[in-house]
Length: 375
Image (cartoon, rainbow, N blue to C red):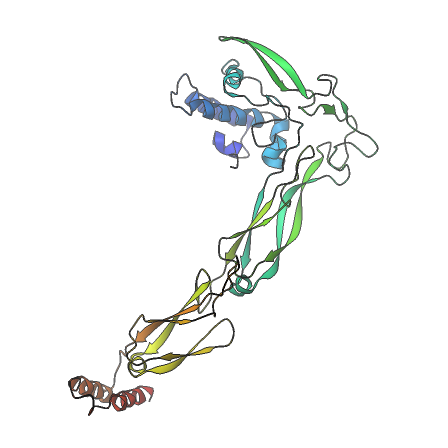
């Protein structure tokens, strides 16, 4: 599950000042401090607030977060490049909660880290979704620096082992509290848990090794894809850190409506407007399809909302299988404006509804009405 945005956690805008962030943190920390809030999730929320504050209160970490998101300050799973010191407001209580609840940065952070997944939205015409297509999508993603191949060092140089942690990326830290003496293994603050120091930074990325850039990708749209479905492009998300794999890109499709059809899975719904007199005596109507129009016979006595099927004239199943159908729903039209002659004909028909069918030629009566309506 995606981590919550740090600005949202503290309920501050992205251009908030340092003082605004500090005030917001104090308010949230007081709200979720376990000594004041006895709910089961209070400690976890307090940790989350503490995490957000220690990123946004430091200009360098905040800059990385604004540029790269959670990938800029860790792997998005609670493992951060730089250990968090205890809050000065609560006198180191943050470290105490870290000890009890599996705190931030207790693991080595220079292990391979998978890149974040990304999402994109693409618009399709009805026909592109039905028959398939190739579409271009533009995304902004984190990539390795082309100049240094992600090392952060200028051409011809390499990072050196950190003298503080001897290349391990971790140091031990002890702290006294009301609960006694605690010892933690935390990321080395000198090298931010990497184990190496860049002495000759890359001039392109300024030792970050990564940067965001716009990319254009071709997405193959399978025939029969439905609205809201997602296409996965493996490895096309943000690049991984420390040799980890790249994330995936998920492209969600949004399909335009059609002037004639309503889609229902692999079936198409078509509402056919039929004159009530044609439905009474039977008729043949033309139905549009995804190819050439088809003729559909409407039997005499067809009622409103009657459903007929044109089999195999629907949409390809995106997962394979048989074609869908076109469901034709009959919608009868009753005339609302009649001439005097038309009214007499209909009234005469109504008066003779109980006559012997052998002596009553309905086709003649409805034929006369239809001819009258067409004049």
